[in-house]
Length: 224
Image 1 (cartoon, one colour):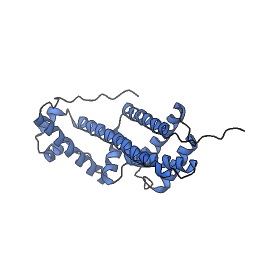
Image 2: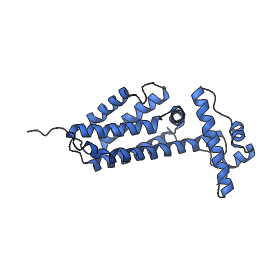
Image 3: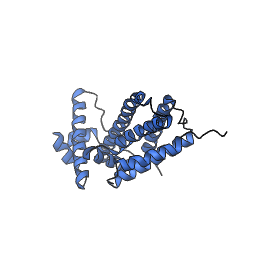
């Protein structure tokens, strides 16, 4: 699939006032895109975005060639925020893992996998109506190469976290295992998001994703 051609921004916001204008445009766009996505309404026009941002349409076009360019900037922001949220939640949950020290090895390992699954679903699926609307917007409009880049970055973070855990019940994932794991989670969360499935974020779906991760990562007993 050929890469989509992205209209470049027309002016780089080098001055403080210009940066303020760009942020006002993006904040207005986030609000309008999310609200209309939640209501199933058509996406906002550049005129509507400019009006909410308190700028003229001419000023908007100084920085964004068209609505598609604004949407691309929003998707990049959403993906960056999702990756940051994933890393933050993983770090917090893994820092709390000493509380599982008294657990048997398998229970502690499953707790670690559950922490990862929860962080992944919240980061890329959203945790309330607003963030879920933005997640759907990103899934629907994201370019293939950007999605793959996000997957690769997530894979690196996950592999590093699992290796740092050093749990005997989990094996450090090989590239093929990590590929299968991340693509499986990617597909499930994407489908649940786009289908507006009530299972997204539910304990039932979380349990199944943990089982999926466990099946790929549990250490096989040594032959004796």
